[in-house]
Image (cartoon, rainbow, N blue to C red; front, side):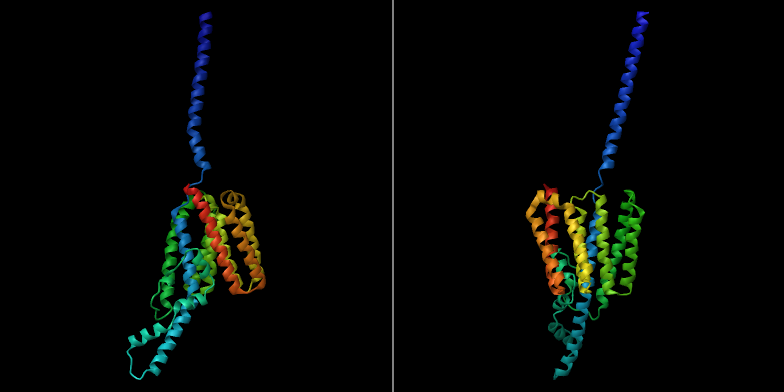
Length: 314
């Protein structure tokens, strides 16, 4: 009787141990899975590549008006050289002489909206590599179209990455809708409209960064996009809308303020001072002054980005 009782006790103890071991094994298998679910995946390289392409497109689209002026001036100068010359010059000689008289880089800068700020982001496009002016504006539009087609290919890769993390379909369709708009504008060579939509795509792209493990807050990237939007609105004399966007920028700063204070309060102070200076120029409604101050804001946004990136390196 006593022996049976002891046997029953042993069976109960062994059963409890088995159940305990099964429970531990189950937890050990689930924990890594839970950890993986809680940790977002690394930012895909293709997302960063798309951001770079979009900003290069902004550069080249913004350069179109200046290049058009330069090409027209070159043709006028060729005609003048023909009239002024006592001897008949060959077409190559006229071309070379007229080219020397035209400063196309000056025209690009004088007729640009965003390029001053893009320089602060260390962004340059195909237009910055032009040494000899093309015969027509077709050449730069060809390069823009080629670069934009590259963007479509990159989007196909990123879209797959976004679906793997179960991103809401609306976010993907919204981006694709803007991409379609940009495609049509570029096909029709609608320069300003293309520039607007391409910049809007940079903002939408920054929103995708929320779903990946990027130590630079997505709001930093969004600020740069909004800063370009402020310039585009100011160019159209839509200063009230520009001021509203500046208020949105201030809200974005608040989202990462405490984190940045811990890392480099001086960078935060410079950023906020530059935003205040830009606000004052928006109130004056002088576009050239807005351009200057917006470039300073972008310089400080770049500093904020580098500050966060330096913490990753450590």
